[in-house]
Amino acid sequence: MLSLGNSKKALKAQFRKNDREIKKEIRGLAKDLKANEQKINQAKKDIRKQAEDGNTDKVRNVAKRIVRLQKHNDQIHKMTGNLEDLQMQMAEMKTMNAMSDAMRNMTKVSWKILPVNFDMVIKKPTLIFHSQLKLFDFNFR
Image (cartoon, rainbow, N blue to C red; front, side):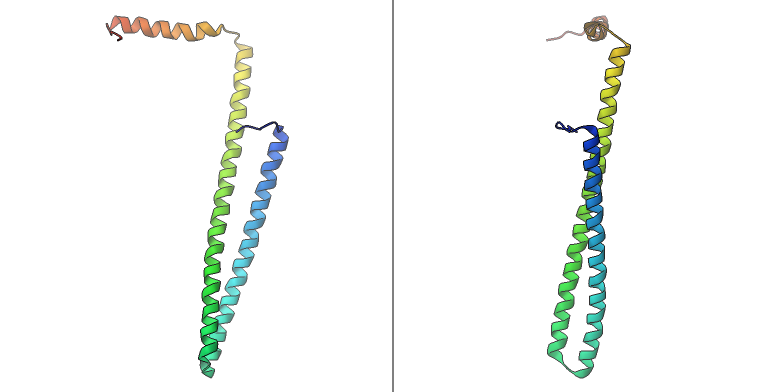
């Protein structure tokens, strides 16, 4: 991942900040979900009371409220899933960034340790490859 001018510390801090915000939103959605479940249970009790009293209009209204709350719960579940997916993608981006940094550092260190002529690194294996191809009489067209 490109840092786009940000330092490594700033990038890590941004990852942490975003992760905290996502976790906070997930906790908030869990609270909303629990509150809706309590409202649904209370509405079911209200339906029983109104049904005993014979108030069909109130029973119909409470049933509609229950359906709305259940749809809202489904939306909350979808949002929570999307946030968890986003959290996983961010974790993957963080590991990919760490891997690319490690590979970049390894490349720098290897070039410092082994000062090699780059042309020989490329030419020698290709010369060996072509000489082996000539042994098998491959014609290139």
